[in-house]
Length: 412
Image (cartoon, rainbow, N blue to C red; front, top):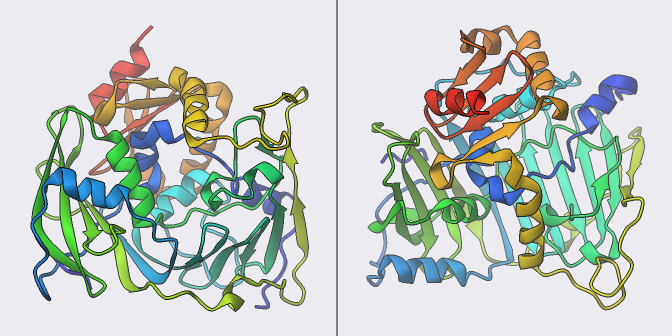
């Protein structure tokens, strides 16, 4: 393994609305393999240094990770993607993104290098700064106020979390029974934290996964256990996943993904700087810059929401994570085939995913060249995942060989 170590014009109208639709999009956690395939794969940064950690079994390292309660820290995360996908051209200051389409944004996030600064002081105070080549995007949560700001077009969006979501982490703000309004901030494709990725990969690990502990690694100056996950099935493109687990706190510090048969990681992400001290409280304050128009988002509830005890928002009621997960699985199950590492996600034509992917291909010649014409559609391949767009507008994705997607698309 290698160590790799405002004032812009305001955009209004349809272009802004297209960029604004995906900020609060929620992807079911049960679809972890396809989520990863869509843009959340990354990797670890190992090196030997310092005093050796005490030996631990894989079960003990997983228990250490599961016991992590680190909610106060600040750091810099760097992501490097080497998937073999074409790198979409970056845009200059004050211009829009490479594409207003979320599919193109996902591909853009999966190519090249990306840097993010993360600040957290408890679950209700979070700031994420994504540093692009010519701009910076910020997501700031302080209690029930969430702000989204992009220096690219000096745009600001504000959301007030509902009462039953105020004690949840930022990424859990979309709950069963609620959905964002038709407009909202877009292009929040941001590098996920090692904690998020470690949770998704461990959730995908089942009896078909060999788990071991490799040589100790050093990440951001901290000694860490090297937890290795190796799928035993040949039905996945993933060869090995390495999760660096902080030897003191159990906090995931980095994640690395190597393709089956590959020698170097195809994705890697990790902290290059980390402090467990409390961040400056001023970092969680936000005032829209001069000239920035603030758009207010609203959480839209279903027409006939449950109003009895046990329902979200009912006085004295708290929805437990297990209840949320059960609801997610019920909704997502009909879109999944296969299990574990061989999971394939199907997005029917009526979801509009196929049309959006077609738009992304049409707007980006490099991306269109990478999508090979195959019987019944077009195939976008990479070292770790495949995406099949069928001629009838369906989308199939997974960390699986292309023939698995073709089989899923042909199934009755």
